[in-house]
Amino acid sequence: MARFPKSQCRPCPVRIRCTTTADSARTVGFPPRELRDLQLQVRAEQQTPHWQARYAVRSGVEGTINELAHGHGMRRCRYRGQQKAHLQHVFTAIAANIERLSRRPPTAFQNFLDQHGIPRPRSWRSAKD
Image (cartoon, rainbow, N blue to C red; front, side, top):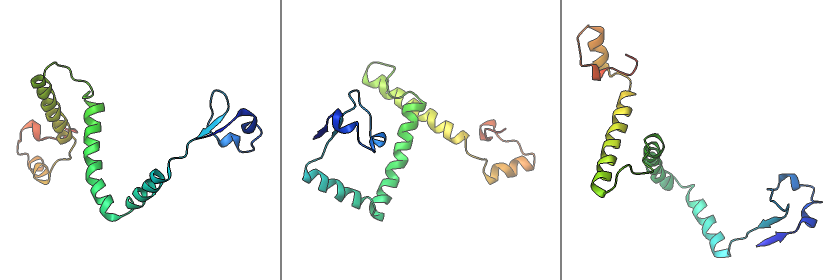
């Protein structure tokens, strides 16, 4: 750790670009060399196509988890007990899937049915109908 007191920070010409603290002093942390080397190694690995392909799968899953947590209130369980909590998770997943399906545009087959006046169940229609 390096700590710069107020007396050193105040006259600094680039102080405006620094972060602010209550006492106008600055503390900078330097990780141990091993940790720094590991960070550099991991950052270099993240630039490889193999790592990016693996991360693409993970990012898709994280989007789903984010949708469930923020869009459907899955951060907190509404019920006590593992069985009831499991049911909440299953029903919420079903609801999220139904929501996703309702946002899809109609398929070519559904458009064909509509163009030729052939009735189809209401659930087949897109959200626009």
